[in-house]
Length: 161
Image 1 (cartoon, rainbow, N blue to C red):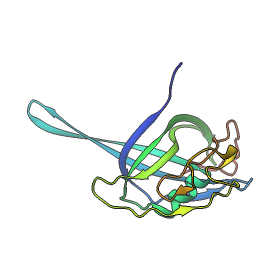
Image 2 (spheres, helix red, strand yellow):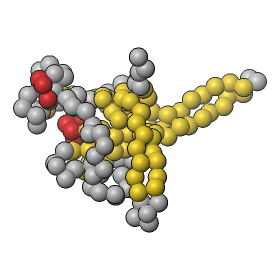
Image 3 (cartoon, rainbow, N blue to C red):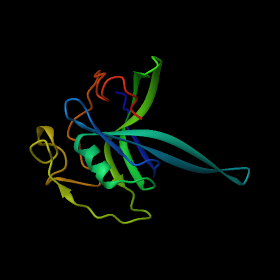
Image 4 (spheres, rainbow, N blue to C red):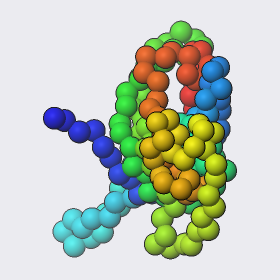
């Protein structure tokens, strides 16, 4: 069975932007930069990769309330490819990380965790699963999955970023 799980550690490149679908579901989007250092013939080289991250539901709301540009974060999720159409009618394809968990990195910083109440009727959201005892601002479980095949989850054919 193929698995499509990625874990990225990097710095947020833009403040999370919180939006709501026409159905009222929260979705936050932000970018992260992941740096890699390696040696070639004794000289250090550096490479930076940029990724778009999408966080749904309570996770998205918590990320937007807690994280800012420049913060170092750990993102666990899956890669997803989707298509959209620009206002000029051009088709575009984007690959983004659909986050399951987002947390601040504590390697170079400290964080204060505050529990929030879930908007889905209990800890962890749908089905009562997720993080027992509630969720934290620093990486709450969203309790559900992103809608698939819903062309309007960004509000029509509007560009997501």
